[in-house]
Length: 138
Image (tube, rainbow, N blue to C red; front, side, top):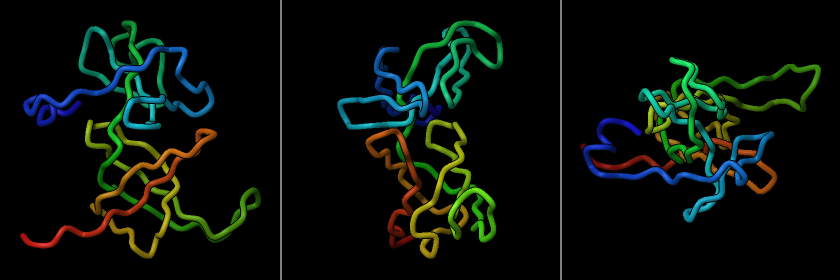
């Protein structure tokens, strides 16, 4: 959770370990499927995918649902691959709670660096970054 979210009083849904999809790091929350992360019990560190011990200090962690929106940090379209059908677009997303995740990007023609995206999680644990409409007015 970012300092700004903490100041606003936003909460992050905590999911029990049994709700965690081991393969994809997904949790079921009252707001739907979300990417799972881990929050350190001793320091402010967050991580994705979830880990049992903090990557910063080594203390135990708890499983949390991560933010479902963020900013597209960088992205690229892969046009040649020996393993996957091309073209496809992937990008790094800086989630609103401070975690950076690598995600497929849908509708790359609408994507741009620093643009807002929503992380959509599908049944089966796949997820992708969906560009959000531009907000008018400055």
